[in-house]
Image (tube, rainbow, N blue to C red; front, side, top):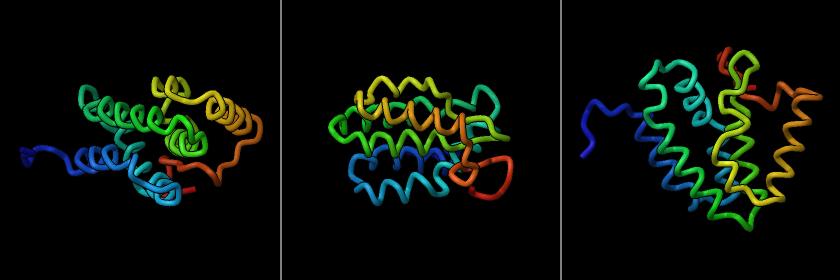
Length: 138
């Protein structure tokens, strides 16, 4: 039973993790590029230890399971990983580029992700990022 001390955002991320495999590509892109990434990024930037990673391991498990389950769909894998990687705080990524869920990427998705990272480092496109240092989604 969930008690009143459980933050609503934690519950939302648990629900998201459980529903990731059920979403179509269009739904996935809509969910991943909305407030969900902003809330996750804000939690990772603002929560103090030990609460900082209170739900991060659980969400990481859900994302890993999702990536492993769609091994044959590199576009879907890439969409999720790029969405999480697009959250920045003063230009710094919120999720490290060496996130452990990357072990579940197919070779094609990994290659595309590396190409995306290279492109972001060489020609930063601020409009494609969710910058948490402002209240604007870029």
